[in-house]
Structures are given as structure tokens and as C-alpha cells.
Length: 556
Image 1 (cartoon, rainbow, N blue to C red):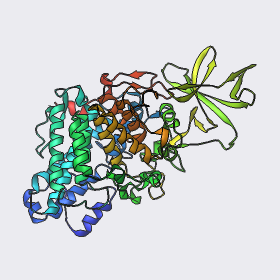
Image 2 (image 1 turned 90 degrees about the vertical axis):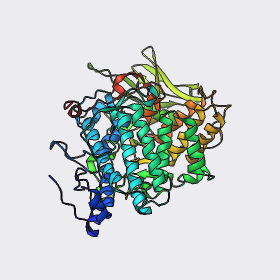
Image 3 (image 1 turned 90 degrees about the horizontal axis):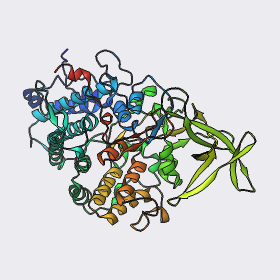
Image 4 (image 1 turned 180 degrees about the vertical axis):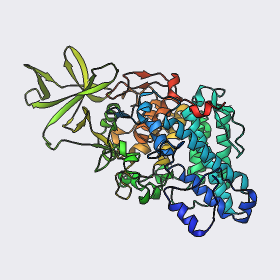
């Protein structure tokens, strides 16, 4: 049903604060309407931003928690090796976590459907706002080029093979106008070429203006930051270096663009006002989603399910430098009330037909003579041994004739045998444990984009310098920093391996890990406790792409 759009100052104010924007981009304004009321372009643009976060019914079936950003963050992070799902759930996030997706799942369908609604809304403004009319109108048009670009990028990375696998693979439907009659699929290369063109247009159009408010609005720098990611995915490494060095930094130090170490622990709760944020999907205190929020699966703090936890492999990587601010601030272990008790945990085969692992949990005592922790198995003492691997200590036991690597910690609370390592990157905006403005682009990523590009260009010293800027911001120094001389003794074959581990540490839970491994043609090792199959997912396995929704393919 067509909506009648009234452009008044009060309605515009309502649009920017409403959590359920009553706007459908199929009601695109005509050029004549926009020329009579230029404020309409702002109205539509704000509606395009809102579609990333607002709850929508899909085919009248469901609405609660049915948001683009919630599904997107789950679809990108849950198939990775950063998190572990501690039990079954009827939410389709389960299928994402275990790589058992199908074309009728609501997350698969909703992200596709809402993505193209956002693109259609952006096209409405791009088509109908004249270039050069004013600095402000150019900026609005540039914002929509950015929104069209990032949405196409989300869709092509989710529903098609990585660019590095070949330009000619089937991509997605490329929409560059409000004419929706043509629905043929473009190649991956064609989609990426259009994304680059859109971002270049966005940069040019926003170059004279300024961001309209906080980091919930995009700017020239946001478009440049996204372009650095796109160039990296396209393996245009020199272009990444040139863009970040000459245009984005332009003589400024990398450190000057980052949130300082002292305030980094509260960065994600205050992302909208931070200099590091290039773009976040802005939420206000009126827009908390409670049990339907992104945070709800990651934490239980008076509210929330707390069923998706930081994985053992990621925790082990952080444990190499336990003073790392990223670990102490955003991974929250829930300890038992008795501070004197220690425990070990390790994955064991679960009973039943599915190939997943729960945890064996044992309290351990300290033997002052052997200086080792141990637990009793019948009449036998099982000691926790320590070995040094690549310069870092690893704990293990010999149990029933087999060697098991174990985690040694203070005794922790658990769910279904999974120690509770809560994740707080999506919590505590305005003190609300369920509220955040999810960060989609930030300077921490941009510097690591350049680091990866440097590594692939053979400039290892420069790559490690960027990595060390990130590590120093995390509170690390001295031997915790990397040089070309110490990476091999720490088990790294190349600077690229160092960069990928640093991307994992810095960007954990933000939706990058799956793309970082697979686009670099590296396998995903998911042999850790969780409901996912105990397996190594090969980078060329067809299941790493989400299926095109049935509603799309059934009308062909």
C-alpha cells in the first residue's frame, strides 16, 4: 500500500528518533517531488540508515529480532572459529553456526530482502538528486552511494564466492536503478567493479561537506575506509597502501586515529562519539532490543541468553599476553565465587550421533612438591603438565593413554559444560547490557588492511609496524611486539600470518574472521568444543556461501 509522505520538520525529527521507521523505499520520490522539497532526500536517506536496524515482518511471518544487522552479525561471526555455541537453539543462528543453511531460513531470506530494500532506497536518492546543487545535497547523494556500496558488498560476500576465487563466478543481482524489472545475476567481478565506482563517487561527492552528526552517519573517510577493504578483498594491495597512506592518513600518525589505550575498554559502548569510528549503525536508548539484541546471545547480565561464548582457540591466543586490553575488556570470564579453586577443561566427544564436543571439567589441586596441579582419577593422580610451543606455555594431561591439551583457569561457571566467557563488544551503551551501536568500519581495521597489503607486497617491516601500532594500543610492549627476527620463533611462517592473527585479535566478533580466512584460501579449524561438527572447513567447500533465498530463485 502506497504511503503518503509528509515532509515537515516534526516528521523529520520523528524519523531520526523512531525505532520502527514507517517507510517503504518502493515509494520513491520523483525528481519533481525532490526538486520541490529537497528535504525529501534527507528523509529517504535517514530511512535507508534505519533499515539496517529496524525490526521488520517478512511475509507477515515474524518480526521480533528480525533486523538486518542482527542477522548479518550472526551470519558472519557464528561460522567462524572465534565463538562457540553452547547448545542447540531453534533460532536460525544455529544453522549458521554449523554450516547447515538452506534457502528458506529467515536469516538467509531477510538479509537478502532487506539488503535490496536499502539499495532501492539509495537508488531513489542517487537518481533524483542533481550533482552540484549544493554541498549539502552532494553529501546526501554521496551517503547513498556509500550505502549502496556496502550493502552490495555484504550481499556478494555472503552469497557468492570470494573475489580471489575468480571474477567470473556468479555474483548477485546488481541494482543500480529503481527499475526492478531486470533481475539477472552479475558476476563477482562486475559487482566489485560497481562497488568501487560507487565508493569513488561517494568520496568525490562528500569531499567538500562534513558528516551530518555522530558516527551513525557516513563521511568521505568512511567511504575511503570501506574502499580500503574492497581493494584488499580484490587483492589490489598497492591501491590499499596508497589510499590509506596518502589520502586517509595524509601525514598524520596512525596512533592519532585510534581510541587511546586508556579509553579503549569503553570504546564500543561509546562508538558513536569516538574518533576511531568511521561508521556504526546508530542506536539510541529508545532502540534497545532486549532479548532480541545482538548482545543477548553473547552475555547474560540481568538479561540476555549468554549462549554464544568466546572460543577456546581464541582464548588461547589471547592468553599468550593476558594483559591485552582487548582480552581484559571484551572477554568476560564468569568465575565461581570461590576464588581459591582452580579447574581444567578440555573437549570430549559427546554421546549421540552428532559429531560435536562438550567439555570435561575437573577441579584441580596444587601439589607443592611437584609444583603441578592435579586431579584424582580413581586412585591415580593425573598431573597437569606444561610444554613450551613457539615460546608460549601450553597445558596438557595424559588421560586414558591419550594426550589432551587443557585450559587451566580459576574455577568458572558453565552452561552445558561450557565455561562462560561472555563477550561485551555489543553491550553497555548508556549502561544497558543489551544496547550498542554496532561498529561497521573503524580505523583499527583500516590500519590492519594496510598491514595485510604491505605483507602481500613483501614489505614485512612495514606490515609489522602497523601490527605493532595496534598491539601497543592494546597495552602491549617490549617482547609482545613483533619484528622480522622474532616471528619465526613464535611459530609464524610469514608476516601475513602475523597480520591475520592480529586481525583475529583486534576484530574478533565484528564479522571479519570468516572472510579473512576464506578469501586468503585458508581453511577454518573448528576442532574445539561446541555444537558445531568437529572438522576443518576447507576454503573451497561450497557450504561457506549462503544459498540464494528460495523466494528469489523460485520466481525465475
